[in-house]
Length: 283
Image 1 (cartoon, rainbow, N blue to C red):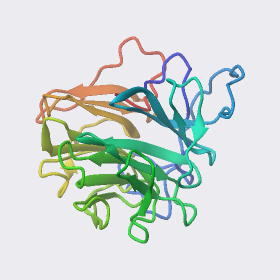
Image 2: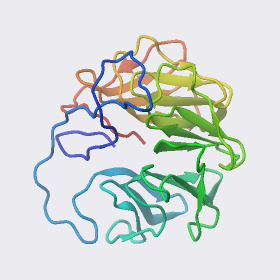
Image 3: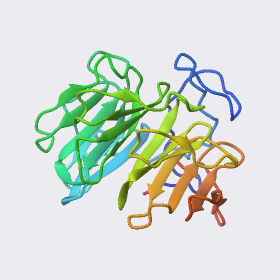
Image 4: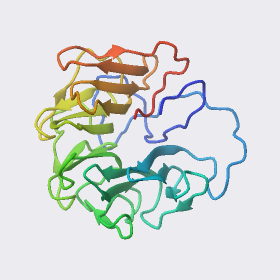
């Protein structure tokens, strides 16, 4: 989703002193949310949803009218079976919802994440279409999981992008995790994705930089040392061209959509015609 014309939602994901790009953030001092223009007062929304930040929306790939929305302000995750006309809250997790992700190879498997503020928060997995859920990574990942990437053909391989603790990888469906981003300049990550046609390639968007892995998420490097901005929340990789990557950035004043089609060239700004270039998501 691209913020344009002043109509969008705000991500209240981090709270502490603002810093300039290029400086590493520690887990104890996440960067401040940048000031963003707010939309006009909304009209009344159907209950039970109120006017709160919507961080992610996911659609069931095999049921077009089934939607899931990760909601801020401690509202968790909501579920709709009628294309978004009515909603009900899922009885899983607690606190604010951050993500809801389907396994590409088996939609019965999905992961949901919540802010890491209580014992029942964190990252959950369901293997039965959401009928039952298991809390994962308890004691292993203590920061909020903002985004999850699942291997295109092996649902047991997944990576978690966290707000303040870096990138984590699991090869056993989330039972155990390994920190894979320790050498990087960032530990606050907003987005992560596998290349659908080449699962050896992943990209991750962070507060300062964009990173790439060419061995399935085991090791990471800076994808573009000349990238002019940060706060990379939007990230999409072409379904058949793994080096074609589109980013959405929101670090003033160089926010917008960036794209490249070769791994050896810098990302180029592609925001012509946009009047509000805080980009929160790209699909």
